[in-house]
Image 1 (cartoon, one colour):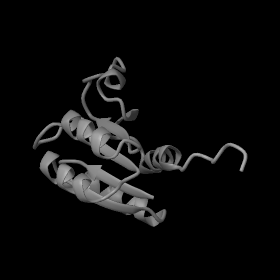
Image 2 (cartoon, one colour):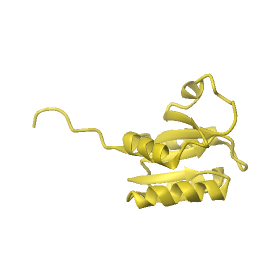
Image 3 (cartoon, one colour):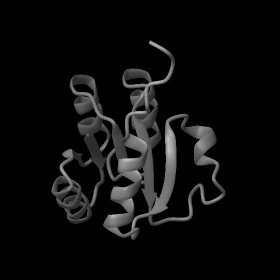
Length: 126
């Protein structure tokens, strides 16, 4: 599974990255909008873990670009603020699948990545 982490705090991104890599995932980190857009324009990803408040650029702009460039990629938004605490993030970002606090344990975040990044079972008769 391919994961893109978009997080301005390098220490936090590194913790998540190491944890996901131990589970066998291919993980790339970007520190802001420009890095994330550059990655998404060249490479595929299954899940994006993205801080809602980036130091450089807009998380919603990255999510919007991802929905155009890679419509099957799911976005897990993380935050340490109360922005969108009413759940309205799901109205603003069509590819949002989860919204959690930055302090969410890495095991829980990894479980969400595995769940949302899993390939759906094939259906229909052959």
